[in-house]
Image 1 (cartoon, helix red, strand yellow):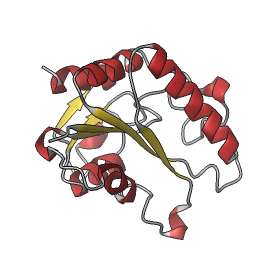
Image 2 (image 1 turned 180 degrees about the vertical axis):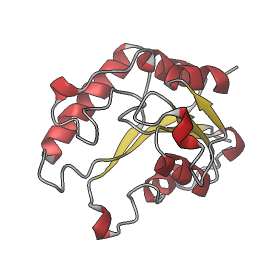
Image 3 (image 1 turned 45 degrees about the vertical axis):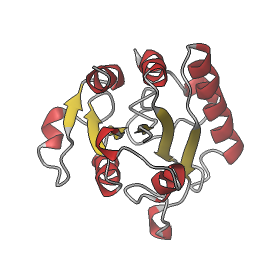
Image 4 (image 1 turned 120 degrees about the vertical axis):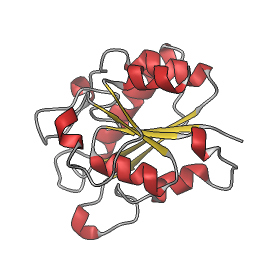
Length: 180
């Protein structure tokens, strides 16, 4: 059975922009310390890796789909140069009011990535920095890990209805717990 790790992007792989803003162009995308190494370690451990991220800034007209593609291409190229591999990135560009099936905490992109493959859900994960990431992971039957490298602080998690399976300082610390 396949083991999969789903990663949120902003606050997990790269530094969040100014609070509640967006990464709008490739020059604004900056990896968080240890993120590239974490993805390499997951790759070496045999996990399939996917990015699932809400990016409604496209629908809001703050940046274009081409900008989003250029940002993603920069991330993928750097991850591959460091020895990691992200199989695919899924970006929901819809507004919440559009009530789509792909905006986290909904799970359409997770289901699409899994497809008809047999997945070891007890050893597959969703790693994110928000409650909606944790909810999405739990809804998909995955283990959910909250990282504190985004906007969320440890004290914030106490108020969440959906609790993560565990909390890590950042992606690298989370990965080291997964692949022990």
